Image (cartoon, rainbow, N blue to C red):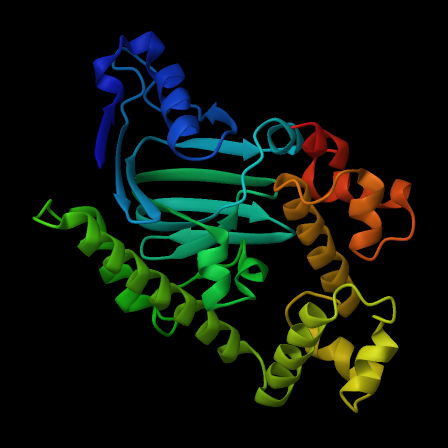
Length: 314
């Protein structure tokens, strides 16, 4: 499947509204804001979007003047989305803010961002590639991928060069016999390279001893997510290290051990509610390590911008 859109098909005064509608339909629902001096004169807002499928992935080539997208709590509540996205800036400048991280991009840089969390994406390019990624497909390859949201992958980072080459080939790939099967295989290979690039970036910034400890503790947390014993002290005891060593291993990723515990518990509860595996807010809270439904609801709203009851009703 390949779709083509151009604002030049619209009257100049309607072009930005048309652009907003197209991008929200094929990318992520969010507020859009024009930049001053964006070509809003007689020619209007000139932009194009090309969308194609790669099996479970979807990749879009965008060319547009400067503008900004903001996804906030209201969008999370009204338009819940669970996929991850990868942006690859071909030309211009961009900035992504998410989860306390700020990624400032120049041509050749990439950034991962999360549709399930608020973000701001300011773009001043002529060309950028955007790839929609089912969360489970990337997490199956690299479980810590969401922790990289809002961090730039620079052109000199390991495995980024083949990732950029594959993204360029993906958008240019011509239709061919058995194209769907080939596109799906190509998409899965592309995800493998992305997971490798993220993991190698992680390895480059953390000493091996702490990296190995962090990985072991994260796997342990995921295996024991429902345990009431889960605490910093228990994590340290189970890994024969001090609580300070555990804290230091997580601090290099701008994380805390218990912050990750509650983040994963909230994400698991959200999945359970969206998939209908919990019949009440209280059940969702108790099943995911919360002892108080009111505290669970407050934490859930802060994390996702909507109440757990609103997902239950949906």
